[in-house]
Length: 209
Image (cartoon, rainbow, N blue to C red; front, side):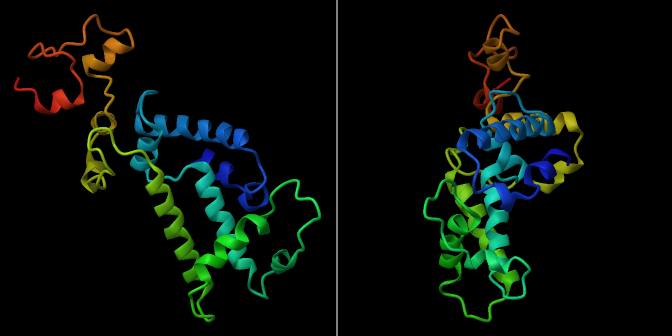
């Protein structure tokens, strides 16, 4: 609630120009916040955190806001319409809002009627940004593909139960000996019920005991 608003504040102003290393610094802060929110551990794949919380990575989200802002600026009545007519500098030291967004927005609006509303264009931009992010995620290690949506009824469960479920879906659960042995919290990775080794998530879902 606090960090997300700060990360996205005035995104169209600075998002197109900052370096990859600066984006990674901000992304690490968001990753830690998502771990706290979900109760996941540090072994959890970053993509799993974003899928579970339905939150885009920092760069994808901030560039989405930038594309939508540039789309709004294309209308003559917009107070920042002048941005769309800026000439490119002789030496492009850093990307600008126009250089980053102009082609992207043009590709989306190319086949649309001229009377298409800004609201519709922004919805298409949002849909494309989300789909691009989903296509870039690593497949879930348990399913080998993109997981289905979490059942809404899970919101009725206690936090401890929800934490265990999201850890199980990630493949790294702190209550199983397979994980505890790896981080030095258990002397063995064998299942406490049947003795199978290791006691990982696939075994926990099929353990006969």
